[in-house]
Image (cartoon, rainbow, N blue to C red; front, side, top):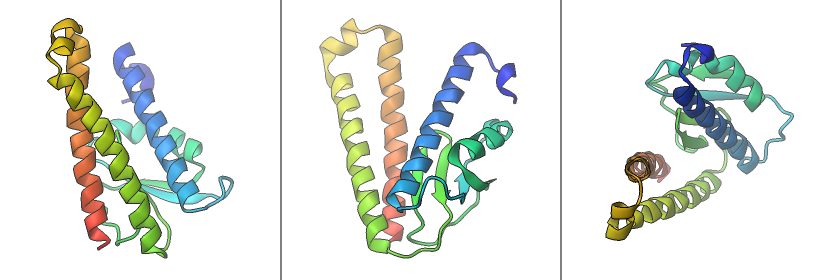
Length: 162
């Protein structure tokens, strides 16, 4: 599916997801202390083929030597990973310091738990649910689902390091 074939709302969502994935990839690189100008390999584990036409763009924005789609990729423990709207993004580097990756995942888990709690608190607030437009309430429900899924994957990755 090419970007120009997507309707406006879906195009904005796709572009937003690409942006978030690139940010996550750059953060992985920074946390691993890899210079931004050094080409790296990434693996994107996802189960949708929506993004396959956007690989060249993603690769360029990530400054990737190679970006591979692999829905069955199994990383060894300690490989830096970020959960993104497009799937799990792995920075393909040799595993060195598992403690650093464990700490990074702990921070990411704490951030996602905080975001999840904020969204859940809004939905638990009867006044918010009654007064907010239905689309906003539904957006918060979707955020809770997304954060819950992201949290489960991060905890699974963290457990794999133990």
